[in-house]
Image (tube, rainbow, N blue to C red; front, side, top):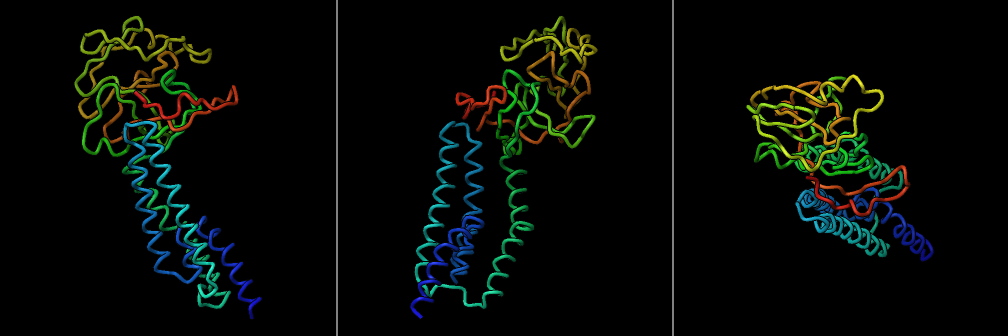
Length: 291
């Protein structure tokens, strides 16, 4: 009997943290502490939302550090708690093994197919979403390999303005594709480009963040609109956007205006950056506010 208890205790100690890593609270449920497991699961989902909200605050790198500490502390606490509970051989799910394991698997399936997608969608649609930069249209502000956070909460209380770098869906060849560009003009603005110089409402605009490299070899047909464009008037409830890599950006000069309803959020900061060509991390870019 003692050997069985020892074996059961050992199995619980190994199984509980593994289940907890798969789903917070599941290790506690496996040890028979169902209410405790459910409570920890609900608490974890609340803390995920809190961490997401902290990530989009303009205090790098402290916002990322704070969010990371919250999540790491949560996982450590729940895993240690599950191990302590599992040390008591009396703590086990009072079900037959087949029924017990079937229940645990069912919980994982329900969470992954129903609960987790709803919570993830809530965070992405209302708070923050991560994106990876895969093209050079926003260089030098955003580099290929930068991974950024987009604030999807800010425009719920205010309107996008000139200079904001936003993410939107307005790509004519693939409307499902997300696009990242800078807002140049808002409703009512008159946009004109003369010899690559931008004018808004007939006023010359100095842009320290752009670069002119000339069009790529396969983009020679773009040259006319790169040098001179407009004037055009931005419709109300719409925006004129361009990439900072002006000669290699496919933007409002070519496919028109971005509607307000198409803008999903404002870029916040770079949380990771990988230089594929050099095979190394761009440490100096991590935590950088995008502006």
